[in-house]
Structure formats: C-alpha cells, structure tokens
Length: 313
Image (cartoon, rainbow, N blue to C red):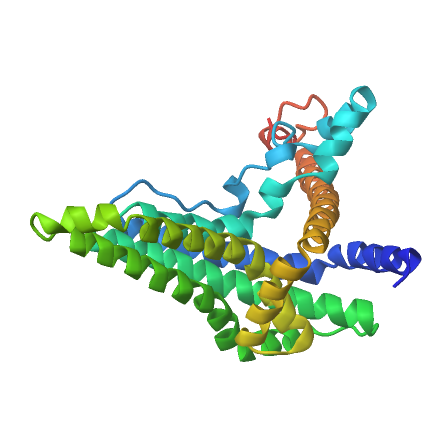
C-alpha cells in the first residue's frame, strides 16, 4: 500500500469518526459503564469510583470548559493548542482505564471477598460493554472505509450481540494465562507456611516466582495493548476470540514498531475528532442556553443563570 493510499484511509477514518452514530454508540457505552459503576458503588464499602460522562475530566482540554476560550488561546499559544488538540491519550483511553482499573484493584487490593466480587463485576461490565461498543464501531468503520457501505445501527448491533461470547473469550484467554501463573506463585506461599523447611525451600527456589512474575508482566502488558486489537480483529474479520487473540499476539511479537505507529496515529486521529466534537457540543449548548436566555431578558448583560451555565462559569 502506497503512502497516498494510507493517507486516504486515514482521512476516511477521520471523516467517519464524526458520524453521529459513532458518538451515540460510544456515549451509550459510557453511560452503561457509569450507571453500572454507580450501582456497584452502592454495594461497596470503599470510596465511590464511578463517574458520569459529564463529570469526567477533559485531560488536555481541561481548564477550558467552554470552546470559546480554548479557540482564543490558539492565537496566543498556537503550538501548545495544537498539541492539546492532537494529543489527548488520557481522555481517548477512557475505555482502557475502565477495564484496567478494576483489574489492578483485584490483584493489588484484597480487603474482603465482597470487595473483590465488586471489582470483578466492574471489570466484566467494562469489558463486555466497551468490547461490544468497540466491535460495533469497528464494523461501521470497516464497512465504510473498505467497501463504501453504510451499515445501519440495527445491523451493527445485531453483529455485536452475536459476537459477545467471542469478545469475552478473547479477554478471558489472557486472564486465564495470568490466573494460572498467579496460582503457581500462590503455591510458593503455601510451601512457605511449612514450619522450618518451608521458608528455606522458597528462598532456595526464589528464582521461580521471579520468572513467574516476569511472565505475568508480559501477559499484563499484552492484554493492555492487545485487547483493542482482539476487538478490532473480531469486528473486521468476523472471527472468534481465539483468532482475535492470535492476531493480537502476532502484532505484539512480530510487528511491535508497526503496532506502536498505529497507536500513535490512532491517538492523534481520535484526539482531533474528540476536540472537534467537543467544540460542536460546546457551541450547541451555548446557543441553546443563549436563545432561552434572550427570552428571559438575561442575554443582554450576560448575568442570567442560563448564560452562566452555557459559558461554563
């Protein structure tokens, strides 16, 4: 594929990313994860973790809650503004953080069995919801870019629901490998409980837990970077979870540089699309509130409550 063809594909993806249907799918997924998180917060004894989409930080766009001030900053700080527009991995990686956060809590914090069950519920909810949304978005984009077809929401929803088992199995394969390695490490802890001889045996064979820890680190990194690839493979090739896992593993081991380049390019494209959509949403809310404020006689001096809300003050 020539450089010109690659550029055309990137531009097609950028154009497609502004499709309202894609934002609807992503928005509904964020709402489902947030609503489920709120319910789980009620069952948990720890601090609330769930955030509604409108409560989330805007990362590189934070500090300019209204698009007007953000656009005005481009005149005085064009370089800094360009970076903020084109590089926003924190906001773009929200689905990944929703999945990784509970996984880290499961491994690192074991306050009680009930808390562990809550974190497992958060993890499974995020994996299923974002995998389903991801495969629907990938299916829409693949049909649009490669075949020039425009699939309906009903078609991509049906496709996603029919592949829920494959999407979940793709993630569970990595978790199963991690669990086996973790279990082998736990055996070392049981051996260490043997009076007198146990600690000596574990100290002499300590290199085994170190090797297991290294393997678990590889599996964890592979899941974080490979889970989106598993979802993309299932969405594009209409395959199962094992095929998605093998494709993701192949990318990680055989073509890491290409994978890194695609990750950087995808972050730039996604960040730009998010910024454009955010500017449009900010303008929409401002115009809606300003028009109502006019009827209230509050628009002229800018002191009305609706005007203040629309301005982000």
